Length: 508
Picture 1 (spheres, rainbow, N blue to C red):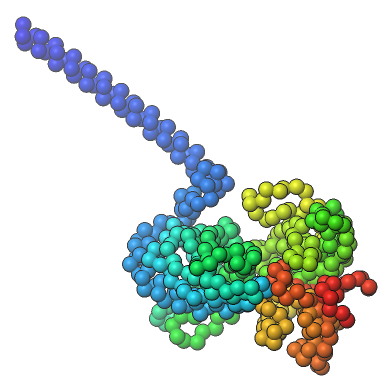
Picture 2: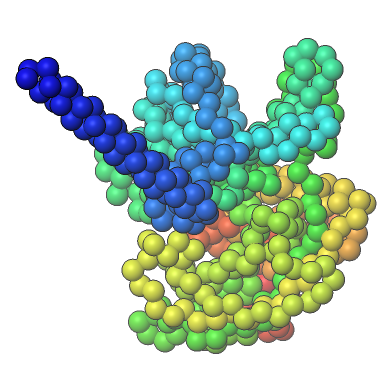
């Protein structure tokens, strides 16, 4: 009897185990199918879908297999960082301080590093993508994130106060493009090119704290430093602009790696409609600032007491990379103290067809970053005409030389004390027309001006001679004067209209 019951119980237990095993395998198979479906859906998501799910800070390699993880490189970077930080601090101070001087806003008389140490926390490379393999070159994109602990103190001197300013909580999120120029001799790399990609837009977050004082001692200081940092990043580090570094101590030809102008953009500011009124009494006095590079800003004349002004002024702008560079147009209200922005708009150049004039009506926005703006009311429209001319080889070389010459002229003006920095508004400057170069405009103020074709007070030239004309821009301390206006301009002002220089109280 015991034998029979034992056999029976064994059979029941065996059947139960087989049934349980089969059920478990069926369950696992169902889960695998469900995971496969989820992975297929995840694999079909594009960049925008992933941004909605993960936010802006997702690593590139999560969504795009072309970006490879480089844990081994981050480990080596951690070990090398103490040495890299010391060397990089010296290089950054030597290379960035001249840029701070060039891009320094007029409200600040001196802007230098009093302390610069990159800290103990190294940046992290989230992924690397090999962008292209040209003969003799390797192009790579690095997804770089850095939330470090640097010690950075800026010595800020203004007319009203001198103050050390500490940059705290620095965070950097950007894609760095690196191009290696290969060589046959050791170390097998003759030069390295580095730049920040424009898309996704580089993010540099930080907070400013005054050391031993209040940051409010210098009015508008935070905004001025932020504008300076953004101008340097956009104008010097953001692609297509790049840093070219020869390697190996041997003289090499880096001309093919350097940025070359692609063409000339003719921009006619026709008129504006229904601008926002910023005045308590009367109406705004609008003018337009136009630029592709912040270093080369141009501006129209001021139209007094008018919310639908007509300018019909034409400017010539150098385009260095039509595929990535936009045209920026800002409308300001001229004021006695600080000019107020009425609206801004960005125009992508990639869709422009060479030798074809295009008329556009652009809707003005309060800011290019609408997330930071509470007042989102309509700001009116701006009517413009654009005409793009593509350079040939000869025109390209002439444009490069002309840019260098004009920058050098402005540095001389700064050294002579005519302007506070090379980012000051020069209401009248250089124009590239065909293969020739001419100077037009209304002048640089404070007793030294540029009228017609002359730069005054012995600092410039009229044809081959000297001019001394005192029509120019006053208000050396104006905050909005940080733009280089009419750097490449051929403005057509109506006869009898007031120039910004004249409105500042400097007569002809």
